[in-house]
Length: 306
Image 1 (cartoon, rainbow, N blue to C red):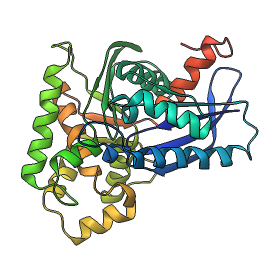
Image 2 (image 1 turned 45 degrees about the vertical axis):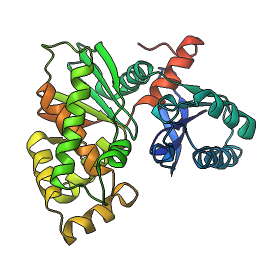
Image 3 (image 1 turned 90 degrees about the vertical axis):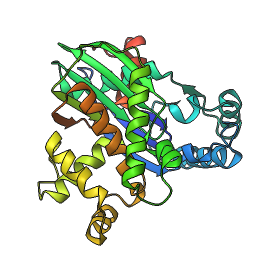
């Protein structure tokens, strides 16, 4: 068994996996703490002491949980939460001093490719666009016949766009327009193939999972449903433009800890999907944590997967 801790901008997650003989991963234990590190960045672009305390405290609590589980090894990595701050090196050193965990900070491209490696456990092959909308960044991977054609990371996420663009709990129509404009500008800055279009969008991460949960709730679908359409996403976004008490109650019931970030996250998702012509959405439960573990174990010769 192996433990993987993912220090993200919205949350820090612990997953424990059993590695199967064929290279598959069976999740045995998961735990999450909402830390909101993207909101703990000061005007100089540095993670604050409060942010470091939140991260270190969560890592310590995860260590206590792992002491009760006989894991062979635990790996810790960070994404945009530490990648996009100015004091990355100092934060990594402080977390090691306080917790003993050596944190590896992934580049945006590394995160995107590891997202895809993990999601391939769900996708298999085929063509499409993978999208991982986190709190502080959005990763995109275009794939054809099961192989990545491009992989990029944009410094826009559900939490940092909420912080930058939204003045209240939920965005106004004007604030949603600002979010979409910001995402379109970031897409234009990327070196993307101009002719790449994909009907299928595979979402990984919290925004995709919770958008699907909300879709299931609003359309009365089974909770295990793992997909939705562009028309259903448009319907949800239209409803978010004019929130009422029923809307707020459903958000609180489905995702109380993400009530402020889900609408910016869905706006990012919709903007990206329209840019690439995506009409059908599926949600993968596997992503960067699975991809990270497979990458390490394959380098050690313990698994043999593509």
